[in-house]
View 1: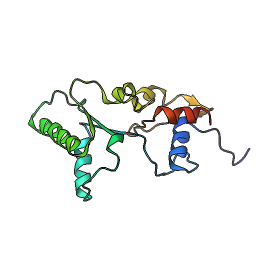
View 2: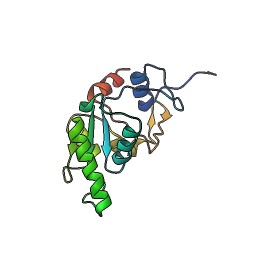
View 3: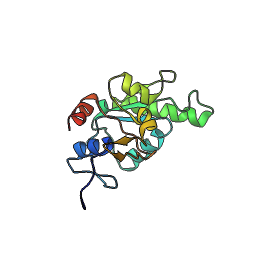
View 4: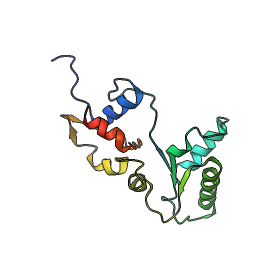
Length: 156
């Protein structure tokens, strides 16, 4: 039928639930996150933005985890300094930190119960058909969804 949208992908269902909007591919929505993961590849820049915006506290540190997993061990003093900044930020703000050797951050999110599905275990399925529609998850998007959110999605 003209104007009828096909069933939603898992990404659209998650973003609809978290934003309270009827979200489809291409929409911009604001969501309350279950958890956020910062790795040593991106967290130092995020810390800079945090300070540049004048922030001095983290709203929900229990919803954030850092992982020293991309540049471990550090290849040079600059990377070692990034790790030191992450450790200091985590200590100051009560953010959980996985050290070098603890594992891969996305996998640790799942193993610790913080997330049921993450980008890493969905990346091979990002071109798979869900509800008759292709779910294209941008490679820059990291979705971490808590187990409770997925069970609610499955019943929708």
